[in-house]
Image (cartoon, rainbow, N blue to C red; front, side):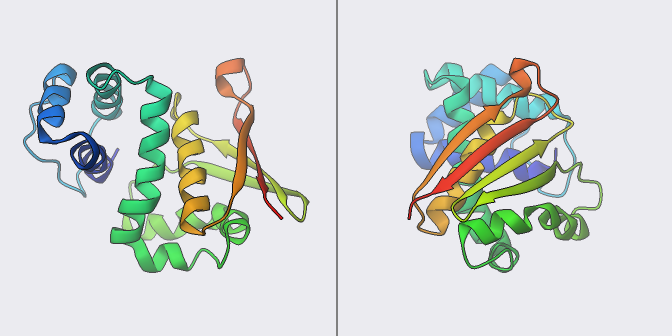
Amino acid sequence: MYGLVNQAIQGLVTDNFGAESWVKIKEKAGVTDETFLSNKIYDDSVTYNLAGAASQVLSMPLGDVLHAFGKYWVLKVGQQKYGTLMKSGGDSLMEFLVNLPNFHSRVMLIYSDIRPPEFKIEKTDDRTLLVHYFSTRAGLTDFMGGLIAGLAEMYQTTADITCVNSRADGHDHDVFQVVTQA
């Protein structure tokens, strides 16, 4: 993953738990890099190890860490680093999610070596979408749920977000049902 992802994990931890927690997490994860270069590709294991260490050091379930990271990614990193790109996604949560399959095509213009997930969106009624999430990386279901929750917050929309099919349960991809309030 690009170093920007690891920078964001660092930001989440230091913003919410302090710099001392970040030092403990890096140590527990076996990470010796003082800083991460945003455009450098790091082995995925670095990111996974940081998330696992954060879970242990912060005494939080890994799923909660990943969910918080997904929200942080949208609300902090997305807004600060990609504000224009985020705004181009649509004027509402539902519009953004409908446009999600095209979103990473634009991101690939910035990060040419990115291995982005793929999305298929099904609109089941005016308030409900199914977000099919296909990733080459396992274990990121809770992160994706956090991303959707962060988008709902960004658009000031109340939404019920439920993972209705999970790779952890043997499915070939994750499916999230997103129901917005009337």
